[in-house]
Length: 240
Image (tube, rainbow, N blue to C red; front, side):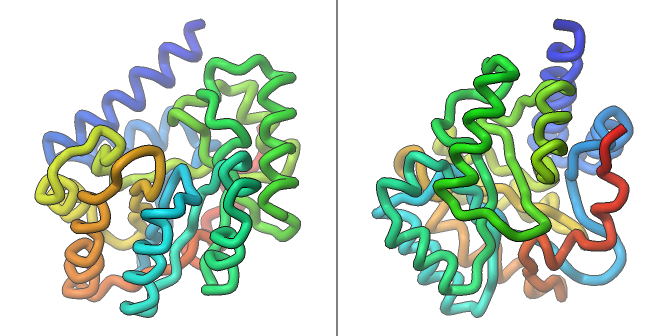
């Protein structure tokens, strides 16, 4: 219970930091408390990663793919197993377009609420649905929170747990202007941007996405998949 409370406090601090436009102060705290979670990539260079959660979605995923294709950008999509089985053509479109696929659980039941056995089954079921047979492999917990023992299961199955450093909290349907602002404040080399292309009306995210891309490009930042952004960073996220 104490460990779960620490995780919750840390995530809330990270969110507060983003809202107050001081994300890097709080991110340094999270990096110290949870070194087994990937929060961002290397600060040297000029690369950032664009990630999308909760898909695939028949309405919004194609719109995201169209924008990314226009700007010749590759992203990482954290997909839900049940949705992948429902929309296999969209999974294929993501993959054949050169994007990367990560594991975002099978059922989108909140990770922190699952027993260890149920969590492991859920992780593996999603892996089968998504066809994740290459390394490195990335997992993002459903609902953000994850316990230390669940993290051990993630590593047992050769995944890296990836959260992010640039959040716009778009599941809560903020205006597009806020989404643009929140991501802009967190843009720097190594940033992992977290947006959503499913789970409700994502129209504001779609409206904000071209500006987010343009803002990054104006700063000389280039978009990479997670496996392109993180290879020099992954060795620090091993089992204890």
